Structure formats: structure tokens, C-alpha cells
Length: 411
Length: 128
Image (tube, rainbow over all chains, first blue to last red; front, side, top):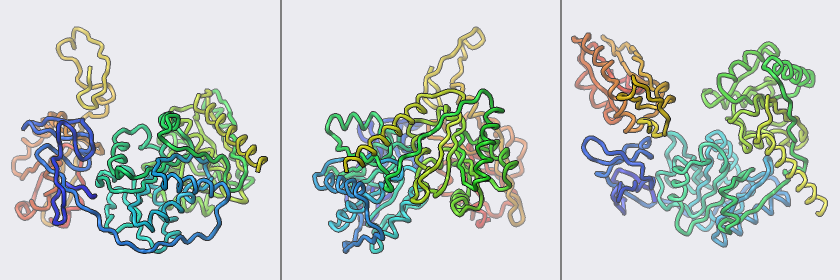
């Protein structure tokens, strides 16, 4: 059902907005008493003010039943088929599931079967990704693969979801739905802002029907989901190999004592990339630092760009980089996931910084060697100290490679 | 103590000078929410719209807005000097009906708008 604070002709249900000290829109209890003794919810205040004098109106969403087709121009690998079957089994048995697959394994492709099945049953489907840039990219892929399906995308001010067969959305936009979805796929669960965000988790739980299925996907798994798996509340499946069966690039740690030395190491590394004409992404922990590195890089090459969450034309810069118009791109963690470049290396400066968590570093390492024909690439972590995240990241990548090699030998 | 803006707990080093007037905000918030008088001037046909606000690029909830409203005294002092103009305060609720004000104020040549945080007034420029 669609939930709104405005009454419409087709509203079928009306409830108090705040009941027994709990906001019925976000199920939060962070309330604030104003000058007139009215309680306001502070958790969902940014969407629009909601207080105890107001009511919430719910209505059914209109959906048109039709036959959907999947237009896939390539075949799934054996590993991808296993992942796809795992999702279908979870959906058939009405169990929530978690698929952990390494970066570049083709997780999105594994969801096609279960989505097609749910679509042809006339069920309501949502595909949730916390990062807008990744959301747009996956949305474009789905439009090509499901030509007869009406797919709508919700983010920021894009709020058109009428007649949609599949809704692509950020978790924030789920506030407009109440027990709406039969199937909800949650990609990149370890990504900011979804990770450790109780408010967004509440919205996800609220938007799924009581008998609906939630399927989680990510390259890494945190303790919260591991606990659920151990308690048998969540089905789990893991894929250790990429679709081209090559190893994941293992990061190399290079230590420096001061920034001067760091720049010297970086210069040497980038000069080799210039000679080889290979592209390189330089990850930095903060925006200010990114601007400094970009200015410094202009000495090496005339055209260099810096991408952060505040950059206005991110898409066109990424497009130019993908086209090979320039060799070096400086970026914050905004580019750590969801983007595929064919022939690149990655450098992480100050990789011991708290911004670079284990999950983040694994995702960065996963940017390298994703495309067939360009499976090799280098990942360098430049840091003053060796952080726990760096150690855990390397350990997990080595483990995944070992697991993949064992699986390949037994095949 | 509990910060009145972010609700996080923080430690205050109590001395004689702040014993009866301890800081209400944590260190991060006291640095982040320093009020500045920002000014935007929008030329309109036959006049000028001047827009003053205290916080640029911040997201505030209702509780935070209520607390920071005490900083309006800076703008009140500014208002006293500008007696001949029409002055309108904009808050999070009134901005929703902002376009409805225009038939009433269109004949004034110089208009001053005040608000706590910045709202994008440029998108209403067609109404002037």
C-alpha cells in the first residue's frame, strides 16, 4: 500500500500518525514536544513534518498484469546459475536469503530469474540499492534486459511509482510504502548509508508484506547477518569466483614515513602507468585531501579529475574516464562500488584511515580486473600504519582466492 | 552532559567561570552551528529582494530549529536598521506556501526575507 499524509479519493485506510508514542510512518519513537504540546517525529521529519494531530492515509497501488520476458544476450556461468537457483529456492520456500559473491561475480544477473518468476506471478517487486549512482547503472541494465516491463526509479525528487512492475529505489524512499512488496532485493547491504542505520532497516521491514521475501546481496558480510545465519533465520550462499574465473587482485601494502615519501612512491608508480598507458584510480580518504592530490597530479598529466559526493557532473567524468580520455582519476569512496572499468589499477592513499573499512577496501580491490581480457591489475595500499581493516581485507581476498581455486580443482 | 542539538553525551570541564552557565552544546556542534549572517540579493523588476539567513547548507530537524531560533536576535538587530522595507520571515512550513504570498507583496519594491536556514528562492523568481 502507498502511505501518505494527504487524503485521496482512493484511500482505503486511515490511521493516527503518532500512536502510543510511536510514529506510524517510520516506527520510530524519537519524538519532540512542541510549544503547543504536540508530539512530532524527529526521525522522519526531513520527509515532511508529522505530528500527533495528523493522520496517515493508505491506498492500494495500481498494477497491470501482463507477460514479462527476459532478454539476456549471454548465458550465465555455472556459478551464476547456482546463485540464481539459490534466490529462486529462497523465494519458493518463502525464506529470506543472503548471497555473498565476490566483486565482479555478476550478482545482478543472478537476480533475473527470481524477478522474472515473481513478475509473471503478478507480484510487487522492489530492488533497493543505497547508492544512487549504482542504482542508476543497475536500472539501465534492467531496462535492456526486461523490455516489456514497466520499471520506475525512485531517488531524491524522482517519486513516480504508479503502474510500475519493478521499483528501483534507495532505502530512504521506502517511507512511502506500507506492506507493499512481495519480493524485495537489497543490494550492497554493507554500503553507506544503509549499514548500521536502524531507521533505514525499519523502513525496509515496513515496506515488505508479512509473507514477503527479502533477499540480501553483497560482496562482504558483517556480524549482524552472520548471527542471523548461525541462528538459521537467514539462508546463505557464497560465490568465491568471478565470472571469468581469474583470481581477485591481492592488495600490496607500501609503508611511508611522511607525505613527501608518499608522493615520491606515488609518482614512481604513476610514471610507470604513464609509460604503459594504463588508467589508475587514486582513492583518498577526504575531499580536501583529494583536491590537493588532484592539483599535484596536474604536474604529471594535464587532464585529471577528482570525484567526490559533492562533484556535480560525476556521470560525465566517469564516462570520459571509461572512454580513456585521461589516465588518472582521484576519487573518494564514492567510486568504491558499482562501477566497472576495463583496464585499471587502484591506489589507496592513507589506507589506514578510519574511512577505509574492511568492506570498503575489499570493494576498492574489486574494481580491478573485472572485465574479460583485462583480468590483471594492481592494487596498492599506501599507509603510514597497518590497520586492522587492511589486514582483514587482504586475509579475506586470499581466502576467497583459495576457496575458488579449490572449487575449480574439484570441478 | 547531553548536547541540545545532536543528543550525544559529552564531557564538560567545569570551572568557576562556567559552573552556573555550562555549555549546552558539544564541541562539534558548537563549531558547526556558529551563526553567520548570509546575504543574497536578487534584482527583480523595479526593485530588489534581499534575503538574509543564518545557516547555509545544514539539515535541521524541528528540535534543532527551535533551539537555534534564539540566534534570530542577530537578524532582529539588522531589521531595526531597515525600517522602510517590508520584512517577511520564512520557516520550514511557510516555504511550502511561499508562492501564495506574492500577489500581496508584489507592489513593494524592496523586500527583505529572513530565515534560519537557506531556502532556494531563485526558483520563485518568476513570481516577481
